[in-house]
Amino acid sequence: GAVVSQHPSWVICKSGTSVKIECRSLDFQATTMFWYRQFPKQSLMLMATSNEGSKATYEQGVEKDKFLINHASLTLSTLTVTSAHPEDSSFYICSARDGGPQEEQFFGPGTRLTVL
Amino acid sequence: QQQVKQSPQSLIVQKGGISIINCAYENTAFDYFPWYQQFPGKGPALLIAIRPDVSEKKEGRFTISFNKSAKQFSLHIMDSQPGDSATYFCAASTQSDYKLSFGAGTTVTVRA
Figure 1 (spheres, each protein chain N blue to C red):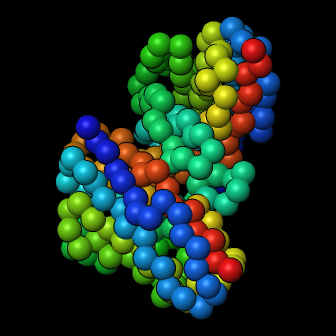
Figure 2: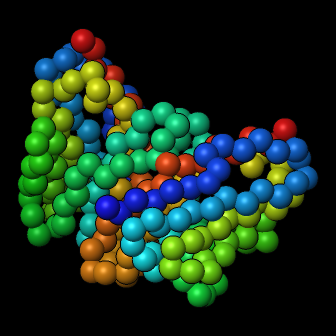
Figure 3: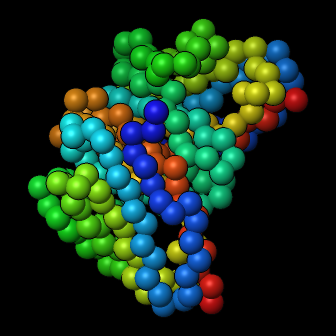
């Protein structure tokens, strides 16, 4: 149980285009989802927290107009990278928790974004 | 600033040996300390986690030692196997927002 999927697993796009990444909790209801960014050989950096039905909260330094997050249902959150540029190329990972007393987050497999 | 400091950056261990990774934190509000294993191109997977009311937790070959007064915790991997070669991250969070602060990561290489 507790499986989180991401789609696509990798995407290549041209500079200036927008890319949408989906994060789904397959066997539980995710009241909270988190989006992380990971550059090669670096750690995970939290970008934003999204709660179902409410606006996402962004970490300091993350442009909310560039990284649009929608958590429209208890099983789906999306991250849209708008007007992508080569510096946005990274590994994007989501995680989800079910809102219960347990702190555990379940991570997705990640999405590799390459902007040409 | 990085709220969780992790060392070493990398380590090499012989098969059957012990791998030890250390982490230190400053925020005394942290109350959940997980360790994650990540393989290249994959998302992190939870290995083991501990809360500050426990000084040690063991699951199979993985043990967390926790020193609340020193604000330090460590991961011991016993009988290291080549399949353990991966990057390991410590992390910490609070029950107020569940946001995870990650350490910088340790790349472990187990030589056969």
